Image 1 (cartoon, rainbow, N blue to C red):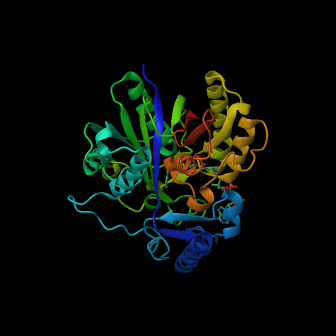
Image 2: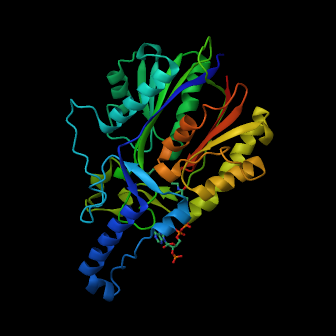
Image 3: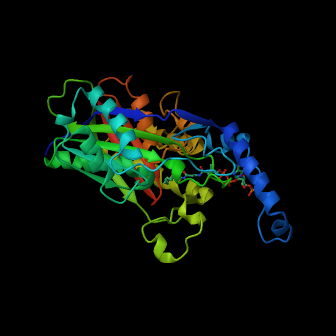
Length: 372
Ligand code: CO8
């Protein structure tokens, strides 16, 4: 049985940002138009009026200040309210592959490795641009990697599920290394016309290089242990899928985009995650005092404050539980990895940290790492 380590990380950040104020201005213009167009039906009680959104609410409820997106103009056009991403020809790279390649090259460079050193690509994300061929196989091709690639989806928890999958293959000896990439184009499946969720998501791609822990010369993070859990819930759901046209309902259906009961998610996921982390740490033989850093899924600041306090038994000190959601919003599976990539270099040999992602499914995954 071999051991595995994270030797490199990369983050692709799109060039466009949308501030809360810009987002709210576009939403409110859309809502005003909608209400004017449906004035009679609203007065007759047949259609619900669209209430106005507010930047103050968004910041207070989520901690999000802005988000990165691949396309800004479509999202902020009150007549459209979703991104403009021209279709790519079959001989062009897909959007997800392009983002993932950028992040992967950064991860390889940090690890001092090239494509020749990689045996597998796992594309772990909440949505995939097409059914097949797998995006991972396209990324493998673009990077000229030998071996194999496959896609997987566990929504917001995809990164940690991908890391455990790669780690298990390395432990078993079937591969020596894998790139686990999380390209997330959340802007394309967010319903920007729904006030309750229009502020939640952003776009990004992350990459993590996981290698056999043998003769590593550069600083890296040993993977001490991993743990995954799922528990079925309909509280975060997206009904889009390949059976869509067979249902004979081709109209613009709300349930084909991201749907959630945010309050229930908040209440049900917090105990699930806190208990999961506590159980994982106990089985790994570490206590709260041993933990130097928590890189949590980035959905909501209050959620992270709560989990941090539960895990450590006290309010986390500055830097102990870094948040990036103020700048990136919720980027689904990529969130905890952005935090890890940006806030891990300062740890010293022997320092222990925990990466945790959670979300739809419900799903939760944790990875305990040790700096070496
Ligand atoms: N502006 C002003 N007021 C608003 C707005 C707004 N934008 N939105 C809602 N309100 C109002 C509501 O209507 C409500 O009014 P009232 O009290 O009169 O009914 C009031 O404000 C409070 O609303 P909520 O109860 O909804 O507000 P919360 O305090 O619960 O905050 C949150 C909402 C921020 C959504 C919060 O519930 C939350 O963060 N929950 C957890 C969500 C979460 O973690 N979800 C994980 C989903 S991600 C995942 O698993 C991956 C899915 C795949 C990716 C999909 C990509 C698109």
